[in-house]
Length: 307
Image (cartoon, rainbow, N blue to C red; front, side):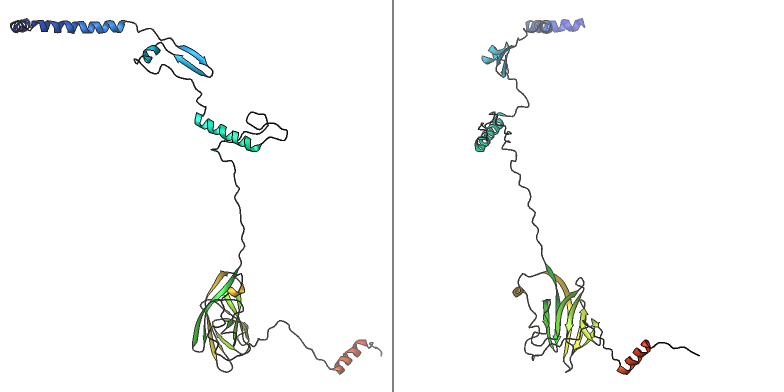
């Protein structure tokens, strides 16, 4: 090991580098010693805070304020103390302006006192412009609509065929000139279409006749069903109910479509023959005068008994 150091030292002397090596050795020893001494020394004097009370604003000045003003050191030497619940100044200004405007619009009270904020007028403070002031209650409107049942039918008068949409109550088929069927509306909840049948017609088909098939005063025909009618002269008619619908009732009768020209008006005028309906039933009883007198005598004569 010593031979190594001797060889290095001789090499440095020959090259004249020993002053540089000696300076490096001294620096390696001196730098740790200097750092140890600087860490052991106490810190600079603790800054003393000088407070100045200016109303609600408290200003705190540290000893380093002069250094900060000269451009060296920290620039946070002064700060203000504030309430975290205090609103920002911009919002406070808008709230104050809104309260002043509300007070000026309200005018003086009945007692002549001022209604300005802080005037003791007894008025509650006006809300801020950000909060809703007028709440409009919802308006409820009730509308009643009336509906009626209509029938979509297909009607045949001989070889003539016509599809009719929206057949309404008291509409006539095939037309007003020569009616054979009158639409009377629907039965129950719109399940069947009811037609008044001319008394001279004979009915046959899928409908239900009232009071009977032989005396078909009314016929009930459901959707998809057909009914055939034949007159005494041999003319035939056929009716099919395609659909029964509920529609909103028209305000004016002139707006209603009509089935008066279901199959044309070129037929001869005929009078609708009403069937004999069982509205009033009359019962007639006949009795001979002699029989009535005999029964009266028997009721009034006393019973005679003897030996």
